[in-house]
Each structure stands twice: as C-alpha cells, then as structure tokens.
Amino acid sequence: MSTRVVVVTGGAQGIGLGVSRAFARTGWHVIIADVDEEAGHEAMSFFQEQNYLGRFVRTDVSDEAQVKSLIASISETEGQLDVVVNNAGIFSGGPIEELPVDVFDRVIAVNLRGPFLMAKYSAPLLRKSAPGVIINMASTRALMSEPNTEPYSASKGGVVALTHALSISLGPDIRVNSISPGWIEVGDWKKSKNRTSPHHREVDMTQHPVGRVGVPDDIASLCLFLASNESSFITGQNFVVDGGMTKKMIYEP
Ligand code: NAD
Image (cartoon, rainbow, N blue to C red; front, side):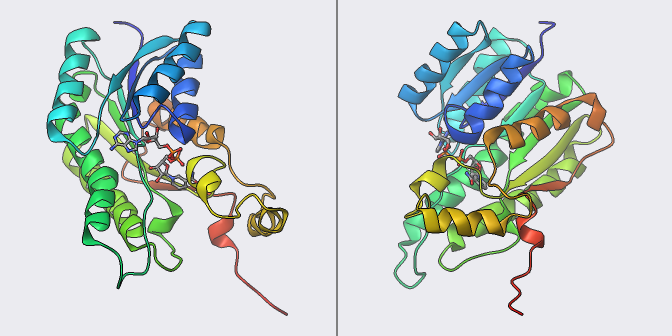
C-alpha cells in the first residue's frame, strides 16, 4: 500500500476523532480502534461522506487478546502500519481513602497498559516501515495536579516515562513521543461539573495565556508533524500543548 497507514486508539470521539479526521483529510488510511462501537460506526459514516480512507475495529486497548487481534487484522488487511496514536484514555478519581482500588486498576489498565500493549504488538509491523512512529497521549496532569486525581495523574506520568523508555528501546527504527494536552474542549471538559457555566468559562479563559481553551485540531496538527519526516530528529520527548496554562503563576498583588 503506498498510502500511509495510521491506527488511532480512542479515535471515535473527542481528541482522537479530531486526530483521525486530520490524518484522513491529508490522505492517510486511518484505522479507528475504539471500544465504543456506536461512536465508531458514526465516525465511519462521516469518513464515507468525505471519501476518507479507513475502517473501524472495535478494540479495548487494555485487553491483550484484542490488541493482538487488531494488529493481526492490520497486518492481514493493510499489510502495513506507519504510525500508532495511543490516544484512548479514561478519567476517574476521588478522595483516596474512599477510592475503590478497582478504579485505580482500571484507569492504569486503559491509560498505561493500553499504550504498552499497543507498542509491544505493533513494533514488528512499525519496524517494517522504518521509520515508524508512536505518539502517546499523556496530559498536563502528568506534570501538575489537583486533589483526588491520583489514578489519572499516575497513569499519565507513566505514559511520559513509557515514552522515554520506548524511544530508547525501539530507536532508530521507531520514534516515540508523547503529547500532554491541557484543557481541550471535548470529553473530560464537557463532563466536568459546571465547566461550561459563564463563571468557569471566564476562569478557564484567564488561566490560558492564549485566551482560549484548546480544540482537537490543536493536538491533531502536532500529531501530523510528529508523524512526518519533518520531525525525524525528535524522539523521547513530551510536548505540552496547553495554551501556556502550565507556565502561568497564581499571583495576587
Ligand atoms: P473522550 O472521552 O472524548 O474520548 C476517549 C475515547 O477513547 C472514546 O471514544 C472512548 O470510547 C475511547 N476509549 C475509552 N476506553 C477505551 C478502551 N479501553 N479501549 C479503546 N478505546 C477506549 O476523551 P478525550 O478528552 O478526547 O481524551 C483523549 C485522550 O486525551 C485521553 O487519553 C485523555 O486522557 C487525554 N487528554 C484529554 C484532555 C482533555 O481536556 N480533553 C486533556 C489532557 C489529556
């Protein structure tokens, strides 16, 4: 296949959908691997309307057998894989004394075990199209925290460290980088209590030196760059895409 092939986990909604569409718009063949079948089929209807190339494969990234079968299916059907975007992620937390341990385990399973499994099973195929590329979705919460977010923060800190380790183990055939988005106006943002109230909107705007929260295309454009040969000297890095939020001190004169 001369067309380049990318798999985007969690690509059926939110940031992942924005990333999937951006790759497809620029002529890539996009495999959306997502646990949500309905959203996956909806994403594919849009692909068909736009004459985009790609398909949906229902996959739970925390499940080893499902990840193996996803990669086997790509090997058989497309025969090639150039880029993996490990975007699937969930958020859950609460006061640590009351937090069921299962919640911690599930967040780690999706957010950290998922990218590990994807890297493990896709590496042989990515190597064949050397240089292959892996892009892991971390979070600014890997770098700073608010109360009661231990499972998520730990999982995303793990994603940043996994990225370093993989870049060394898989180089020079595969480049591995991570992206740490700040607030992106999808998924978590919309689910957050009161996040869309006028007061919170005002607070969120002033929190960002660029004067706005992010949109999926802010992340997608970096994915396209990291997937391209324009970034051939970049590996093992974590890119913070947060409108400057993590650089802003709270200062009361
Ligand atoms: P979202 O909830 O809108 O979308 C996540 C997608 O992942 C969904 O389609 C969901 O079905 C899929 N998914 C969930 N569990 C899965 C599993 N086990 N296997 C396969 N697919 C699964 O979330 P989003 O806000 O678009 O976040 C995407 C990524 O970006 C996540 O890793 C998230 O942690 C990270 N992130 C988001 C923000 C933000 O502000 N939205 C900020 C920082 C980091």
